[in-house]
Length: 492
Image: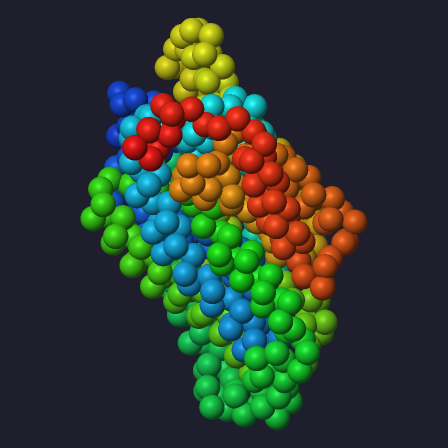
């Protein structure tokens, strides 16, 4: 790629990053004088339906959704879309099941984080501390995947080095998240979601044009790769993948802390209902659109993923192949926006886990006042340190980012699915059950991942989520029941 071509690909991204930083500075100025904890970590519960939908979608849709996912669709075919389409229900389910319940409880207890609600339900500082630790641990894994995926995409498309991409968008997302907090994250997420949709439409158009139209591409696939038209892809998409992926990226995602916390931040019930509908349509469009584009890439990239360096390189290669040089910079903003929005969303929740759920709770419990100015500096520094740490890890990039993402998803789901679902909807749930479930289930999940142990060749999420449930029920049976005051608060 020529230097001029590289520069033309770089300029739109630099402009986009400048807008993100500008939004964070504007939000910081507008939030001045308001309650810092409420404004920095949940945007003072002022999100409307459209912004709530977009920030939930953008945080849920990661770079693996735009790089690894369509790369797998290129390899497997329509079976990958049939598997991935379950994600369309994710936003509707998380807001529908937890949205209103979490919002009402958060206002009742003045909760700012998901961990606040867990602490109030189970009256356990130990469980709250473990929850915060699990959030930070697995969020760091997910953020690493986003940094790596975004930088690899940047390098492949623009011709600049991996490190240049990492510095450019990695440091910018850490800076604007640190400055603006949750409100800035929500607004920048909205911009990112809109850019993602525009990018999908743009890329799909040029893929169809370069491949000679939809009918011609489908005839090519039918002739050269007939297995791609079959749901099980002649054995490449066994039922085990369908089942475990429906758990990983569908049903169990309703309990991901980064999604549930959105329920604390919306303004009113009308906004929640709007977000459920808008979010479902948007995530459906993006999920099906980008994976469908991955399949249609066969019209311009014959062969197999190995010919292009693996599944993670299919979309970057497609962009470079079909897009005019002057539009390449616009095309990569979409996938990079997916990376940026996920990082910022996870970063602010991870920061709140340390500052609000551990440090501030300790100070309040010991009647030690904390000055707002000190808390503001500490929050911004914590956000920056977490982001900087992940940035350093990403300098030595691992491969197969979608596997890293799925590992982190599985860990968070194992830890929080039953703790939140049973804790908020079952009176019999108690402290010992929740502790046993979160600690034991997460350890078992990580151990089976490390050992490569599977049952019926199913992903380890099936082991983690099952053991987590069994441990929760055992602990709730043998442990001390929740006190009547707590049950009245949650179920009265």
